[in-house]
Length: 428
Image (tube, rainbow, N blue to C red):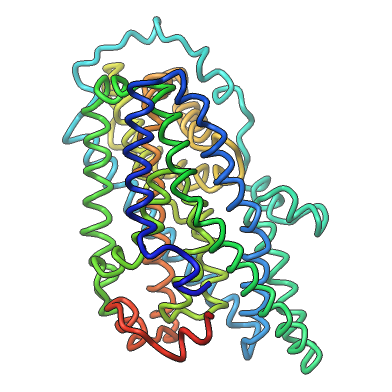
């Protein structure tokens, strides 16, 4: 997808659309509710391309690798990075939740909680680690694509890519065809991105019309603390991590401005996944590495979601005046390190994970307590998704640097806005 295939001012258009959508939702809520199909339609347009793009990117990348051992090494490094950063994110959430104490003074009565609004999440079956691992293996090859789950597609793509690499000359011909097909898919992404402002407008209008801006103020202290925590995590933690590579976080954020505003408008990090993969490859990260790390990150490297889990639990415990000991928090962190990995495979996985985690505390905190954060969850999803977006971007760059395959000169040139002729020709 060339730069000319998308509007130079896409981020500005999406920002204006978000503001207009919020205004419509506030002043004409009933009419704004009818805008929901615009947001849903845009996200569905992007999601229909995610599976084939991941498949083609991974197959082409692995097909060009010299050894299949590189796949395992890259995957292992990515998993190690993910576990360290998400654990750190959870600890930051605990620290901020403890010192800011956003739930203090709410004084909610556990006996008066009405769990009807979240009953589906409380009663929903939670995937065990065994179930999660088995679900990575698709029932059929076609099923991996039709269900829309990222990990089964990635699993099959890795196997198919290794198969192509082992075919020798015949495999290279097949990989070449798939490489051309991937360019066609990215052209389609460019076409879809032209309607991103419409999708962002519809999504924001519906959210404000459905929940109302007043909802933002009812639990503003928690929201403010959460947004500030995500802000500090991105600029301090991710900034320091990225500085190891010699690259600037501020320049990376400017480079990903389109993706930032798309995620802001739709509250879905998936909406930016195809263009994110293309931009990271353009930045100097290898195709095979991008194809492996980014999809894995969308399942395992959810920094914003990790912060949200621990802050939400801290808020619920404080609101119900139920103190948690150091031992309780260590236990919660251990549980979340396992349960949060299965959340990516379930609709509403965040609330299901919260419910499952509270359930492991042997009734110390009632599971119905998640109703206290249900009303503002939708407004907090923007910060979660944006943090996840930048977290996975930095993760991919760092793993590429760790592998010694990151083209730093090219990365600096791209982030500085310089034109790289051979690069533009490759992506045209």
